Amino acid sequence: MAVATAFAALAAADGARAVAVDNVDPLIGTGSREPSIQRGGGAGATVPGAAVPFGLVQMSPETAPALNAFGAGYAYDDTRIRGFSPTHVSGTGCAAFGDVPILPLARAASAPPTRRPTFSHAGESAAAGAYSVTVGGVRVALTATARVGAMRMTFPRGRAATVLVDAGGSQNGTDRATVRIDPKRGEVVATARSGRFCGAAGNAYDIHVVARFDARPRAWGTWRRATGAPGAEGGPFAVRAGSARASDARRATGRRFVPGGLPAEPIRGARAGAYLRFAPGSTVEVRLGVSLTGVAGARRNLAAEAPARVAFATLRTRARAAWARQLERVDGPPGRVFATALYHALLHPNVIADVDPRRGWEPRSTISGWDVYRTQFPLLSMSYPEQARDVVRTLTRQSCAPRWAIGGRDADVMVGEPGAILLAEALAFRVPGIDRARTLAVARRTLEPPCRSSDGGDSGVLERAIADDAVGRVAGDPALRARAAAAVRGLDLAARDPAAPQGLVEGSAGQYAFGAPFAVDDDPATVARLEQVLRRLDGGPFDPYAGLGNEPSFAIPWIGAAIGRPDLTADAVARAMALFDATPQGLPGNDDAGALSAWYVFAALGRYPLWPGSARLVTR
Image (cartoon, rainbow, N blue to C red):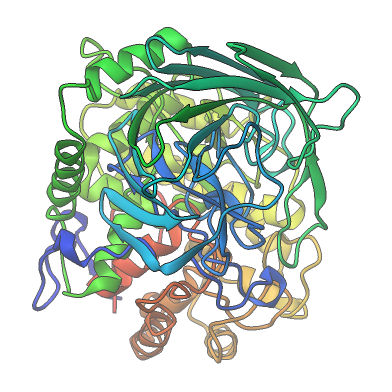
């Protein structure tokens, strides 16, 4: 069995060199090769807009109708834009964030239009830390810091210049929305409550945005949901010219379209916003300080990271430099596919707290446990240990490690105890700066009642077994590992119809039979099943072969090298890598907060973290 030591692995590829920031193409993965997740597809759903590594803000367009946008808010096939928002999650199969979109219009308007302005890719450009597009005749340029989004709008000469600030425009709707205008300061303060990530009821968050313009508006006013109206995106709205405040409250309902998933229901909720009119043909810049704690925090973030004296071009240059520093920490093959995969893997987890230089570390969120424990978190642990350290410190602030943290709360979606696996991996890779005793204690506690879950059907059983084995490895606890092995044997997945999905989440029995690599043996029957499941790599959750676009299949190409058949691994990994390319349709499935992209990073480097809770990497 070929294994490598972890810390030497990411600089060991033949011909590798430091990753160049100029090779990043954020438009890769924004389209959809096969929309339906039931047919092995799912858009990459990556965010094309401006961000810095691990930043809270990802300043990016919200397109319409967004049928394949998921959490990114952007679908490459769309031709209309409903605004530019500072908050997103990249690659998830559920909508999230998209809060307080800002929409420039080259005409007089006082509320969101029913027909959104158009854009084309001919007028669009994306790079690390920067994005620009022409929408409805207005040239828009974006950049960002960790907690601030910056937006420059150049309106056509002689045309009206209107900017809409939509406090109720979150992707999943809002329960409360409030907007206040201070025309003398050129400032709009917007607050909103949203959430409902993947339908979860307990992950509501409050977002606070201070939008500071570099010019005073000539006219202004507000809108809100009309009395008795359901709060639909297209109105109707009640408009008040000259008003400086508007608010609304209505519990959000409905859900966005997911191809192959649940049917869509119109989003309804609280609606309130502001309009500002500037001199015709103006160039107007706005900076959005963002906070999940309060307006005061948003103001501090704005003052600390993007004060007015720092030019837009300087912010953009700093964002690019931040990406260059992070990308250069990994040596890899040249070209756009690898550079962009590493870029996508470094968008999350995000900083979540306001600026505070006394703290010494950054609390994190968008911690996609079930997705990232297989690939992205091991990548962080090896090459970005300060980020892994902050994830561990965040997870261990609670008695039970969260499953899926978003907006500073546990959405409790997916199955198993992935938080415990992340903690075990940090211990295995010896991430510096963590309290090892506390980390192990929280991991152990997460595996037992009342923390231990019982949902998820057979997938839940398998995922809990993986967590037991991972923690058992780092704790040197044979009883935990024995419990894990017994649970996998009890499922007897190998005896089932390999195409059967019953009791399994986002995968078939043929895929999940290799989902716990610690329990896979090398007998001839196992090898025969592995050869069968590797015949194709683009399957869906009802197929008897692997589907590299989703996490249950991530380990399958690497199993051969662990059971004495490195030829199977070499062939399968090469075929899997061919599913990725440098086009908007260049990802074979949802990127899931960088998990799929991190798989490609490891594959291109020829090494993979096959056993959670172990620092050993299998090689191809």
